[in-house]
Each structure stands twice: as structure tokens, then as C-alpha cells.
Length: 225
Image (cartoon, rainbow, N blue to C red; front, side, top):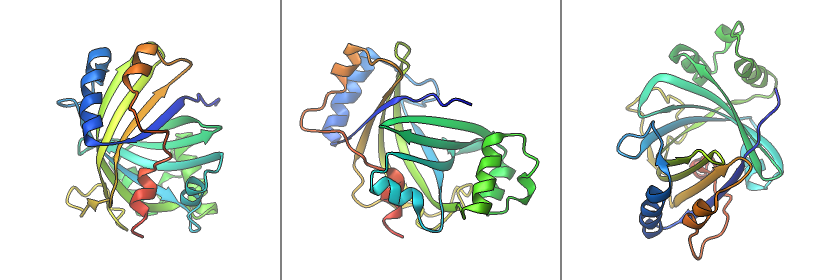
């Protein structure tokens, strides 16, 4: 399957910047239909191998890299996604498939014997890499997201904040697992689009004094380990 790559900007912004952006974006974009009162909670379980390949490649700015995660939204594990995010030459792509809660729990426990008959190619790829490369769940990452969308250019702008880490916990289906603030984690503005970014949105997302950032929520949450 040919990957569809998208452009992506990330900026670290202040609380005052977020308030201003929230107002400007509301005027030129639509709120994501999945948002509740303009936001939703994201919980992800990130994977890495024994040598922390994904973490070191991110820190070192390796041009071509990938990472796996399992994710659900708004504390609702009835719909869980397995995702593989790839980066190449500054562009990003994402593949995903739906997991049952039982499949997700097996993966979190590193018990993949029951997944050998899964028809999903992405599940099979993850299982192969867990067996052959030592890929395993590393930590839980929680945060709050305010999403805005625009059909022309397939643009998606998000404001992410209150980033929390589960330290070494991988019990991400447990609503009571202990999560703590990920140190000094900033508010993150992300802008993603396909072939073009409409000028009205390009103008709306400008934040004086900021520059493109390589901030990684996963890396921030792994800094404790």
C-alpha cells in the first residue's frame, strides 16, 4: 500500500498564544466533529525496542523513521486504534487499524500469541517486529487536544496541552493508572495539510517569536525513565 504523506508544522507556544489562536482558528475553521465542548482527551501507548530506537532516532533527527502506538479517545476504550506513524523528508503519514479491547490488552501485555490470525496487515507487522526486533510497549502518554479542521487542503490544526506520562506503566486500559505531568511540557500547535495550506489559515496560525519545533510527546514522557 502506497503511503500518503502530509506536511506538518509543530510550534511550542505559550498559554496566551493558545488563547489568541483559539479565537482566530474558530473564525476560519470548523471544530472537529469528535470534540466534546471543543476538545477531547487522547491516551496513547507508545512502543520502542530494547535499544530505544524510536526515541534515539527522534532525538537525533533521523530523516526516515517510524513509531507504533495504540490509542483511544475520551476515556472510551470501545474504539481503539493501532497506528504506525512514518516520517520522511519532513513529511508524515499514518496507517491505522481498529483493535478490540482484548487485542489491545494482549499487545500491552506483550502476549501476541492470540493475534497470529488477525487479518489486519498492521497488526501482523507489529507482531513481527515485537518478535524479531524486540519492539514492546514503553509508556502511556495522555494529553488534551483542541482540534480544528478545514476541507480545502485537508487541513487539521490542533492545540495539545496537559501532557502526562504513565512512567513505566503500560496498563493503558486502566482508567485509574497513575499519570503525572511530563515535566515542563509546553503547549503544542500542530498544523497538518496535504498539497496546499490556504492562505487564510497560514495567516491565522502565525505566532510571532516561535519557530518550527521537533517536540515529541513520547520523548518528553520517556525523559523520566
